[in-house]
Image 1 (tube, rainbow, N blue to C red):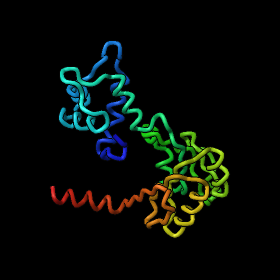
Image 2: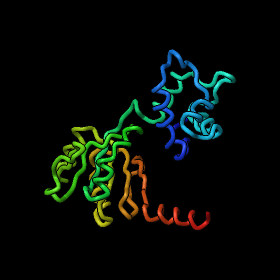
Image 3: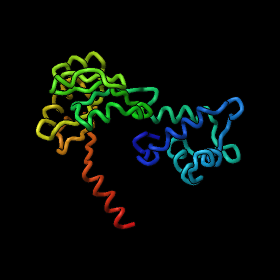
Length: 208
């Protein structure tokens, strides 16, 4: 099954399943059931079955899943075997928060550095991540084989930054700027609208 077919909610639980399975002694736990996983993680058994079916197919009656095979499949779906280097453009509050967050590696995404037009921000963060002058973007991306660009700059400069990333050989862009970007057909683009997400949350609260 293709990873694109996995729902976002399911994808968010997969690292929890993987960490639990990797904590087991496989010689003593050759097979694992959705019931056992659900009980340990505090999830509903039906939910666990649906999640695992989405990425690995149905378990075997009375046996469940082969633990080693399930670990392998979860690792593949999460992209742990194919980590992509990423950079952030815009080292403001949002950019810094994303730079310091370590959870992206669980999904095969390694943020290697951030860039900013304000060269006074250049240096090493407390977490050991680099903030570099924007003038070094092209050089760094080509040297480090960067495949994903994360844009957290103001809307008025976002398209210009996007174009520079595309010229560097970037394959995907994650845009947090409050604007719609134009990219070549072969470039993957994920637009984030934080205001819309908050509005959706408020609507859910009002309808609860």
